[in-house]
Length: 88
Image 1 (cartoon, rainbow, N blue to C red):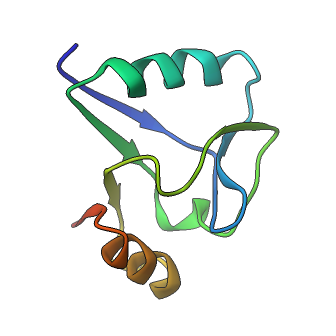
Image 2: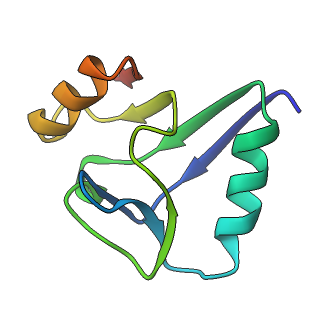
């Protein structure tokens, strides 16, 4: 599989990534495990929130696309963890 993108409902430093549908995590994990490049799309409003279904740890995804206004704690964590952060 080439490049894949997914969007999350919640991004939390301790809990990780989560979504509202309990049916999607297995699909997202399959794509994450089998994609050459995997991108998480999360606008600034998703950070500091938790949703119904856990998807994966916050350091598991190597590419994150978000807003420049995203909470600086998350941007600093990503950069110190070697996560590619794309803001625009």
